Amino acid sequence: MIQSKEDTLKEKCGLFGVYNCNNWNTAELTYYGLYALQHRGQESAGIAVNDNGRIFYHKEMGLVSDIFDHVVLGHLHGEIAIGHVRYATAQERMKEDIQPLVLKYTKGHMALAHNGNLINAQQIRRRLEEQGTFFQTTTDLEVLAALLSRARIRHHSIEDALVEVMTKIKGAYSLLIMTPHKLIAARDPLGMRPLSLGKKGDSYIFASESTAFDAVGATFIRDILPGEIIIIQDGQLRTITTHVSTLSRMCIFEYVYFARPDSIIEGAEVYETRLEAGKILAKECPAEADIVIGVPDSGLAAAQGYAKELGIPYGEGFVKNRYVGRTFIKPSQAMREQGVQIKLNPLRSQIKGKRVVMIDDSIVRGTTSKYIVQLLKDAGAKEVHVRISSPPVTHSCYFGIDTPHRQNLIANNHSVEEIQQKIGADSLGFISLKGLLQTPVGAKCGFCTACFTGEYPMEMTKEEI
Image 1 (cartoon, rainbow, N blue to C red):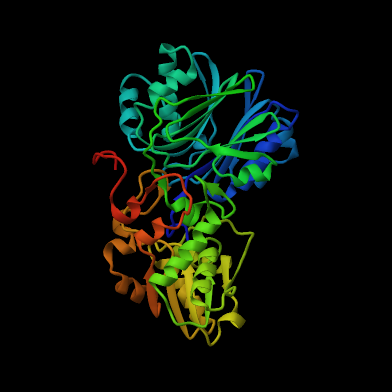
Image 2 (spheres, rainbow, N blue to C red):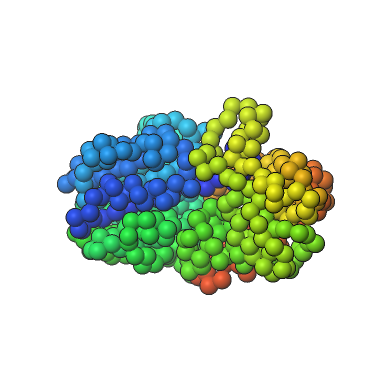
């Protein structure tokens, strides 16, 4: 989905961690792992390494390839590392907010990185500030770290302290913690954000997506269970399952849009999921057309499935500029609209004079869909039929996906017919929620679909939302 900064759902971040028991270059492994996860956040990146109890780190605004080079990586020596790529909300663009967060606590130094959102972080922050705690960032991760530091005083180990903290925090999170001697990973009890375990030689690796294991020559072992804590110390792995439950609510948009198509999440391959979504979408919302095209990148597999199901030729309708980031900043609406054309240009020879089915993964505000439909018509398309491989997005997400306020979501205020008119399409169809839930074939988890239904997986107060 190629959209302007205000017209898309955005994953906040990606995680990568290494406990090196071999002679690999820890910092380089982390660099390549983050490079494979760059799609999960393009605004900042950081790597922290542990060298015999001393933590060194480097983090900046920008892309992984711009921040790290051989000189920088050459100064990051150590046996344990965690890395992070991040998309920041408007309130979180201070340099101090870039992760990993490195701090000193009662037992030494630690580094933390996470993916998700704690919905009760502001309430906890206010209470801790009233008790004399000072905060240097705007992130909920620092709130978690403050709780962890306090709990550590009462417990024998950092992992025992984390067990206590997980009873106090509320929301979605995948978490990596690096101490002088341990690498710890944890997921929230609903498993809303992905996190997996891999191995390279005798070394253990954690990553938000399995594709990062492929990038460093590691083998995928398994997904971390919802609520599970995994500790790597002295090269040995052990787990804590105090908070593990059979209930899980993975964000369905990991399959629709966020994850790379070559990733496997909770037993389901992302590419096959999107292909299946296209087939179901074709059954539910068929169209008479001459060609089916997908909006790069997450619309491509769904377009292939749609075309195959209806026997309509599949074609490449757009050329994507691979050197433009997904979320580069543009200071005005005019430049944002121009940015779409910089990223995406129609192939006139494939479009001219044809009835086109255009497949995209979602419609958020509708402004970009309108612009892309117009691009196709300007390129000579006779008709443009828009099909969307997710249901209408009608509610905001509070669990780590940056969505517009509900009143700015076009499907919250308009019917499908009204949206069709606003974006200028000749017809418009969305996959049903029932159909979408059938697409992650083989998935071993439940799903959060709150952005479509308003049925959130946990109770929330007005203050939390």
